[in-house]
View (cartoon, rainbow, N blue to C red):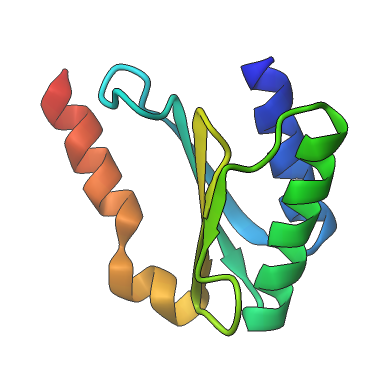
Amino acid sequence: MEKVKLSLIKKAIEDKKGENIEIYDVSENSPFFNDIVIATIINKKNGEAIADEIQRVLARIGEPVKNIEGKRDSEWILIDCGDILVHLFTVSERIRINLEQLLRNSIRGAN
């Protein structure tokens, strides 16, 4: 079911024009999540549309989103999908936070 969820999340992001989607398998490094998805949003409204679409597609398969942080008027939206964590960033926020580098260092350091 996890691979189906991951595929649906990726498709929802793509369908709503999210960009630069990166998926990190953190199952060996995190007791909470198996995968972390990072994507760039065009603007805040686009981020809301993507978050809403992820909620819709996961609800259809009986896997509701657990929580969304920063949904309204935010440059960083965090979506807890249970075993998958989704980060949606505007371009400037993605550069500022640089989560990919933190994840690469964390994954590399654990091996």
